[in-house]
Image (tube, rainbow, N blue to C red):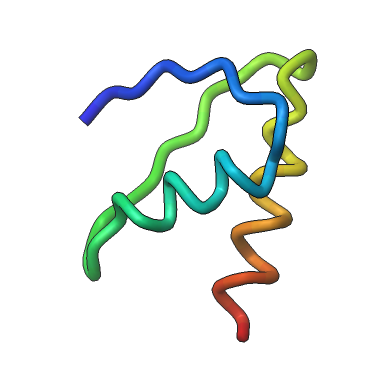
Length: 50
């Protein structure tokens, strides 16, 4: 699945991605530094560790 989003809130973006992932899925992230993908990934790591 390919999704192109322009979302300024890392939490909303992270929730959308986590909601779409299923066990066994692999997530490939390719983004420019300008979109601050690392903030989304950090959110997802924190949420997933709870």
